[in-house]
Image (cartoon, helix red, strand yellow):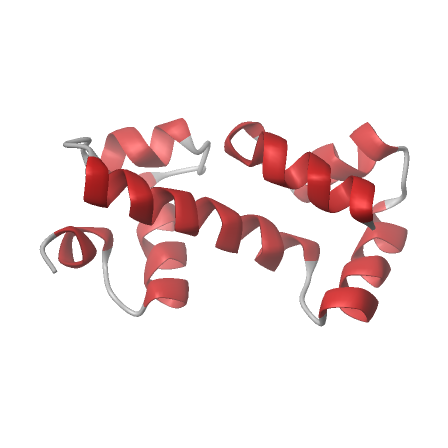
Length: 100
């Protein structure tokens, strides 16, 4: 579990899907998913998304990057997906967060 968390915390901006994490750590996706649910109570994807959103919030607060630039930097499949994930965990859109 520690290896998985360490890898995600180090590489989250470059990870596009959970399958990359499993492959890098030589785990099956099923086993990795089971570990996360058992130890943290959340899915691997949720952990990855939360990590990305926390960093995105920092970028919005500290830099004058566009939402599109942040979405691309964090390897979301689209700006729309990024906005949806951000709102899910932060309770507001990236633009609204920046204007707080």
